[in-house]
Length: 333
Ligand code: UDP
Ligand code: MG
Image 1 (cartoon, rainbow, N blue to C red):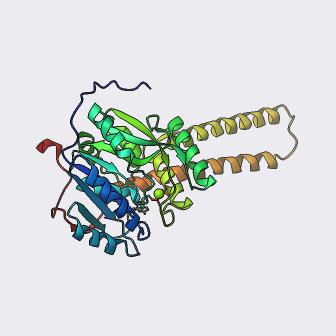
Image 2: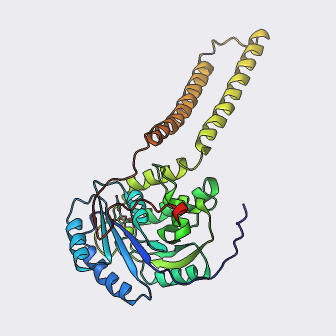
Image 3: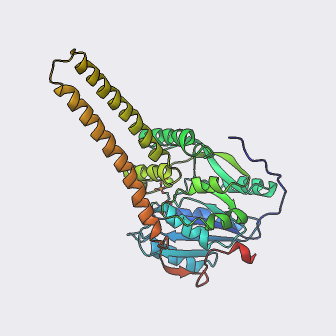
């Protein structure tokens, strides 16, 4: 698939830049984040708002965030009513952002602040999405690196041809793209795939990913697998079609075997009772049926989830933010 041609037009820096930072049990890293972020936003050429989302932390993350927000008006806090997961927390932050551009960052300083000016430069050139592309990863386990490596290649080969390689959610998104993204209200969210889906001129800036500044990863293997599954299944019906094709192949084999059995019987070649072949066919068939049923069930389950039309997240508290900032309606602009 070729890449859409966009004519880029240069523009000024965003009049307001939003930094969107989800935090889940990050009490260890927040003081470091604060120490790094404050001089960084002081040094930027434009006004900045920082939207910190407390994703239902069980530690003192919320206390630290509220204290920070009361010391600094640029710091805005969204507290979700429970742990909704990183993708929802980031969505809540993007919805609340009022800047002309927003950057999604990890709270653990794994997304280096120094990359943001490079992203802004691309923004001024006219790019609407600028994603951080990791060239090196430090301080992460071999397993994590391997699974991430395989994940991006597999996804690109099968389901997300536009998904840039080796990118996380660390990216700058312009206001037109944010408005488009705000209209995608699906429950099972794979944000980076959704950002690729809306289109717009996109480009990467390479960076080397440092280790977490403090604390443990909040993405254990279990959550990563769940995430990869959502990425695979919420964007395409390929698994559904796959189960159909496997079913067809197995059915053809079954029919061929049946025909052969009849011919053998008629030709009097077949004297054995045929118990073994019966068993093989039965188990293969029932296996195939179970697999396709399972995959079907996955989709039915997701239809059920979507049809409930629930809000994606619930906010329990807002600080330094207007009472209701529903996603800006592009039609109002
Ligand atoms: N996070 C979150 N909710 C969760 C899990 C993680 O908001 O349920 C946040 C976390 O605080 C961090 C970011 O998402 O700011 C990325 O998580 P983490 O750094 O643990 O993931 P990793 O970089 O190890 O993949
Ligand atoms: Mg991290």
